[in-house]
Length: 140
Length: 378
Image (cartoon, rainbow over all chains, first blue to last red; front, side):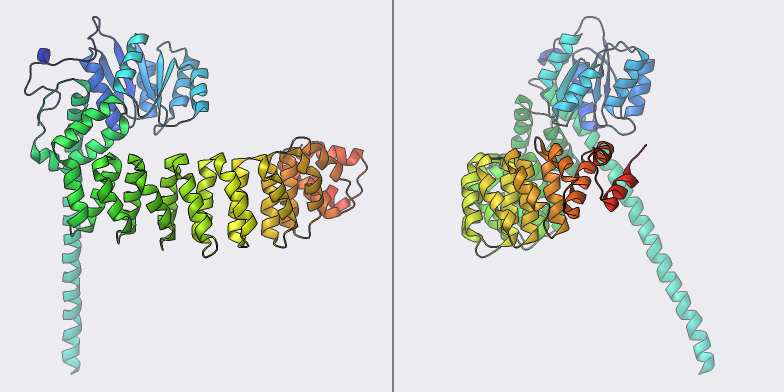
């Protein structure tokens, strides 16, 4: 089974819901859920973004600290290091990349804390991919 | 005879050794096969996630999903995971895929007629997770399945669909013989929200005279649903019932609902002969939050039962002006009431201040001061 390639249709005959970007922006997607990573990577790459992946808090922190990203999409609950702790460390180190928090926790306190620690946006799971992409385009 | 025994025992041991070795080898092979199967499952699931992501991300996307894929358990797992990750319009894309390939129908067939329990269970879980209305009839039938987990998943699925005809059916099954099944039914009903209020109340009114477990669970469910409409009927139940478990659950539910309408009825239970009910009523008054209950609670701090005294003091600590009232109680002529006050102040984080106040007002209760002193942190 081919992965990542269209089997039946030339790409141009398929309508993309997200307009491709002209200069490639880099986005880091950090989530321990394989499903979320697959979905976001597909949607973001189809929109022309360059995507890096982290599967846990520690690798998210390392990649985010060492790479230069135009946006970071960060899950709140991850093994190794929680999203809030990752963003706190970045904030202390002076990381400039905007961070969009993803969370399955339906809790206003978590939202407020995310913003307090430097997140620019906050999206609850489950989410609408079209809405998430609109928020990303607004940031970039 | 002896020679015969001498030969037989080693032979028997050898046979046993070989059988053990064969069994062990068999286990190792099975484990290896299982691991390979799981790895293959994970690889396919990963590929299916990519496929479904492309279907969701691109409109009019037509990468084929074959019948073989659609029948693969890994595909079903990927569908379920994707279903839980998205919401809104994208769900309809998944639904189209599900309907086109008869995924739901296939799982319904498995649940109805497979002889393998594992397959039936997976089918029940899949139907619960995918939450499609076409499976409602099948799920309703399986609320009485012989397997407890299938009953649970059936209720879960109906809750996910928000299938209202199922509410009465689930409520009536609060008599299920297995406690954790009843609890999971309760969780499903909480998910229905206020739609479940009146069926629950009706169940309680009918059954509270004959049974305590089912109605008590229904009351705990109502407490979680937080529907103010339940206050009046619950007060009637409290008035009618003499069953202790139901009384306690009703008082608890009323305190969760937080209506001041419940104050007089709950306060009257402070005179109950049952210490459990006095204690629960005292706690409830603390949750209801009306400071007019303080004087009554202060007298309950002299109750003969230590847990009742403690509950009353803790309730006072929660109420406006309650902390001041507890400070005044440090000088109570009843040493048990003073002790309960000190303990409540300690729990409220007021211990150091309480000790200072005790010394200021000249409390002479040495055991009390010693008790407070031993917990003071410098």
